[in-house]
Image (cartoon, rainbow, N blue to C red; front, side):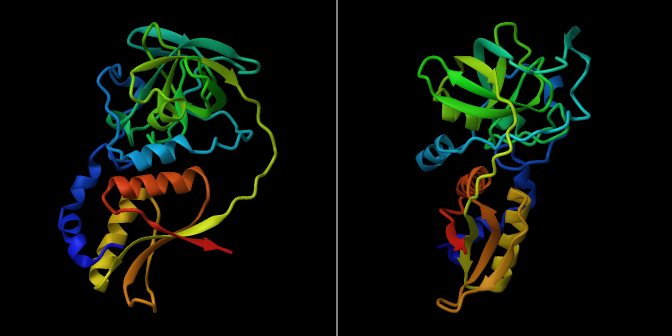
Length: 271
């Protein structure tokens, strides 16, 4: 629980601090594929609890998607070199070196027009159609994850795929620069898995203005439009988000709130 005296240091800061690349999606707009090589990228500020949560992120559900309007060539050029986009990803397999990218590119536009998010399971590839789902296996420890390819890169001769920081955590090489991996395209399927939903309470406040200010800050930070409610049991004003389905979206929301010093959010099951 967060009371007013625990939150003023955060709420008194100008909202411009939210454009720190660690936390906010949307402060930058340059396509990632046109930026310099990611040699000096950084990991987000994470606790042991956040790392454990990212390691448990469920694989994204694989669905049939139309090719995006952006990033699909058939030929594109980066730094004077031309690359051809594959017409089909069917049965594609590849082995090579994977790297990861993090806070330096968090919030920047990917090649297909989306925003890169270090807490989602995504990747960049030079030739696969956008989007494509691939299973990535770390050949050093046999850990696996599925990622959605929505960006171009890595433009480094000896690397075959750039993974989000979250994907690197799942594959067990987030504390290293690279890992040798196997890439296998995964075809869409129509299985629908029922998941639980939760209301997320991000802090409790004695005064309504404090809760309102926190609600606006959290909305800018996470993209979730919350509401302020007053709980009868303790009389506190609480910022409530959701409902949010169990899985990647909920894990990402909890990780972002904890990274922004909101503490562990309270989850209320929705029946």
